[in-house]
Image (cartoon, rainbow, N blue to C red):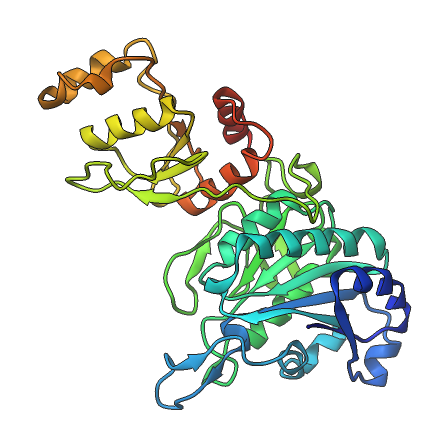
Length: 377
């Protein structure tokens, strides 16, 4: 059973929500200073990850158990939080982020939307999360949470009990960000190493402290966040992907293009497919055509998400150009028929292109409509 740790009696109104999603109330100890202070209220939702990890071998930082400490235990290591917020915690899960499933994204998003809409006293939400899949959960929430209030994701690259643990400082910066009025209506944010990053652009560049650099839109100083940029594409309450608990996401495989690839490993029957590539081989191109003509929505994504691809070559000239560039396959019958160019991912990493396609396919299977969604989001 999930547990909900509450530090404020006024949140008893959440009992209606608790009855629906099966959470358990557990009192959380708090100081009189925190109870009496005129500070905003923030909810910390814990999902597990390294920020809740316990190091087994003191001489080997790589040996630790992610998702071992509870939300209350994580908070106990950051007493400074009471200066900035009245903190409530909810233990959503306690697992490595690699174990988080798309169904968990749906549950988490609908829960956050419900709480932010029903609890006027909440200034914002902070989610502690493993870093391996943090960018994926963040982007799903960025597209689906139906509230302009701040939603901030945070993690750690070192376990909570390890030497030089970065989780406490990251969590403090995340809470400062979540309670700031400046953070509203900026979509879902990721706070790591005093950087504020947009969920649409954020990427784990390397598995060390400081490994989240891409997508910075602001910084967290001693007094709170300072912003340099704001997202311009639709997000959160501005998105058309506001969801409910009943949503069943379409399964979308993610595959790689590589030298010598024949495309014979592409799934034969799927509503959507994302292929990670700088360019496809001739054999892969033909295999993708077979899928597209059968109704599969094919999306191409640059490995780092840093390329804007146009729909080229045009449908009228594509078969001729393809035959010219793939002379050894010129007689292949798969060239015949309508040419259907793949949909470009438009500056999204392959993982995020997959998430957008999963959501888009719940609305339409029409290729031009899907391409339009990718151009806007």
